[in-house]
Amino acid sequence: MNKAESQRIASYLTSAGYQAAMTPQNADLIILNTCVVRQSAEDRVLGTLSLLKGLKHKDLDLSVVVTGCFVDSNIEGLEKRFPHVDLFFKPGAYFELIDWLQGESELPAPSPFPLPSREKVKVSVLPIPISPCTFVPIIQGCNNFCSYCIVPYRRGREISRPIEEIVCEVGELSMKGVKEVTLLGQNVDSYGHDLPGELDLADLLAKLNDIDGIDRIRFLTNHPKDVNLRLIKAMASLDKVCEHLELPVQAGSNDILKAMRRGYIVEHYYELVRMIRAYIPEISLSTDVIVGFPGETEEQFERTFSLLEEIKFDVVHVATYSPRPGTIAWREYEDNVPSEVKKRRFNEIEALQANIAAELNSNLQGKSVEMLVEGKRKGKWYGRTRSNKLVFFESSDLSELLHLDQLVEVKIEKTSPWALQGVVASKSHA
Image 1 (cartoon, rainbow, N blue to C red):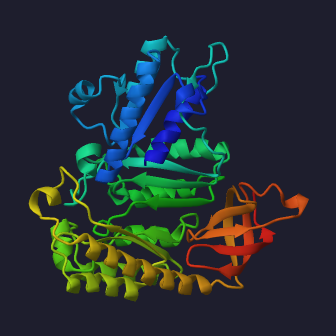
Image 2 (tube, helix red, strand yellow):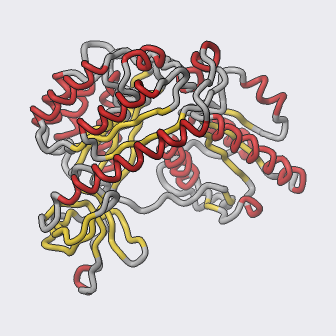
Image 3 (cartoon, rainbow, N blue to C red):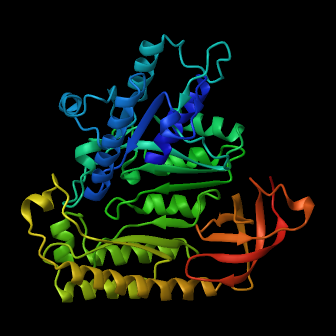
């Protein structure tokens, strides 16, 4: 979500005639987009704000703007705490930024085109990479209040964007050459529940599936309690919706899931995975796991380990629990799992998943997969399959230099837990 919001801010600034500065020291305007999901992330924000205070002290004409999850409802308190910041605006509240910029420099109304008549001003926002893939936020906020999570307190309650607005945006992106869109939400499966009628994510996927030029559709992040049969059937029937689902389980113990306030039990999760694989046999699944949650016993950890061993996810994102001030878990539970125990459990899951991913990916040895070429890295083209597996290939043929934005068939010659290597078998279509 932060990447998507940064892209939108940078797009507006570019369309209004701004241009990127290569370093903060060179900039006239610095916009800091913040993530504070974990305390360590918020600590980095505080360190950056201290650095920017020093820059502002040296250059009084420098403007500093802060957005993202660091900006909570107490903006007045933030202004008193950080007087060197010129503007705080909440995530997604772009018009507050636009109004402020127009007031500061008497800019004309936002335009989708560059404004050559106005002197360009340097901005400390990295240029948007040229890519056939982009993020499209469809719902902001979260109503779940998992006990370890700060997001609902910073992003607020769920607000869905109108379906017509999203369809229009994706249509425009298609005309600009975008081939793949990833729909975003803190809980993407809740999309539409606050809109008139009975629209939901399945309806949105069906409408986006009809847009010419869009080849692939993804969506995240999902919540197991909100993934229903209608959505699964839509994934199975719509040809542009990719066979990949990120489905965070977080723990394999019902007692821990209850303490986390996740809203489901392990048995429900197993049944959900069974149903998904029955309708979409080729699905790849990724998940999130937290180890060392307050009170987690060795037996409860073993249940998580066994769940991962049995389900065999393609990707597992594992994190060690750390107290997050302001959350329910921080208020109600003692962080009583020793750090060395957390680290051991983390390492055990990492080792397990490396073996599982190696096994799953080895099944693709010698087979051809379709990938969308996203760019070049260290002399090799790279992109992802519909199942979200990272693929690299080399091409020495001059006629194949324009791979970017192309769907190509790649024959896999080498596999690892983290990526696939191959050679081009054929090009699909532009």
